[in-house]
Image 1 (cartoon, rainbow, N blue to C red):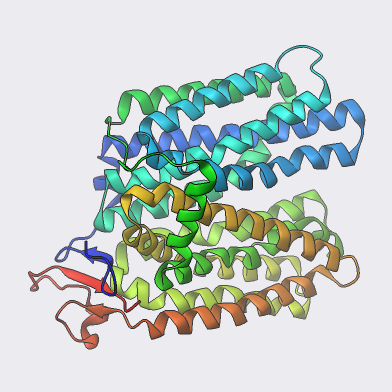
Image 2: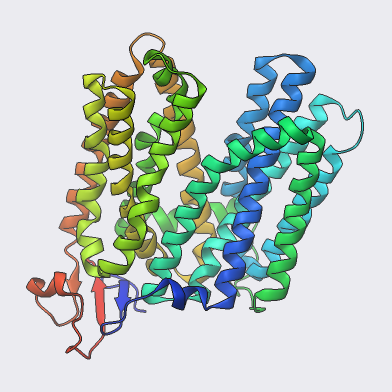
Length: 438
């Protein structure tokens, strides 16, 4: 793949469409997908179990909130300074080692009469190493599959993550209620053991992506930041990904939003589900039926639509209508698949994990800050108005990014722009390549 002004953003063979059957026929992808279910499910289970355990022992909402905050600050630190390990060491080894470390940390939580501050510290440590696993996983997917199979794989991984976030909290609460927090933590530890075993057995051993001399974490972070922010296309693609900070506001305000409508926990749960389900349903069509070039063309407008739909919340709709608004908004978030695919294709393999770490770090801190600000504003104005304001601000930013992306003028090999939506028909034999001026 050439670098510089004409670096490739995506490729597609002639008339090749990926299918779920073909993708899941790849044993390494099946193993990676299974490990994601175990890993993410275990993370959510540990977070819920520890939060409930700490609240049960102290009846302190503040300490429970500190425990729940493990999902943000430690992840941010780990994503910045540790994600590059997925480039400097074999990625399979990094993921397996991360699972082993999390197994040990969670097992330590099972020690009887463990002090609360020690429990919180262990939970923070578990979360701090999670981005190492995530970055290595995101990077190795491209080593396993390519082309349209990669786009479909990225969609499946994203959809699975969304389902696990919603279902994980609910299942975690049920397990804690029926089995107790310690049994839930034991299941969490076992999930990491199973994940590591699957990866060790099913993934092929590959050499480290980077053969360069190993840098200190800070130096690696600086060079990775220069790579991502010094490239117009990478910077734009990453900022498009960070727009999630705005369209995830409804999920963060689900409880007060439902309360204003006279609903309780069930209504809040329905609202949270509606903020995730749209993309899960739309992903198969978007990745299988819409070609790679069209996905890139639609990426900017869909990012704008994701935010604009939320502005309708200013009308203070009912619960059912609010769920419909959030679902439609979430449908358009499948543009992230196009952004993710283009991002991966443009980043050098030897810097891929570090780049994903930076992207994840910004996304986590953006969502955390946006949710905190939205929660504070919702103290003085209706939550529906806050959602509409978040959508409006996100739409303005998305418009700017969409125009920036359009000015980069993707070109399609030797074919004219009028062929952009035809996606390499069956009569076309030469490969299609998208490049940007940057």
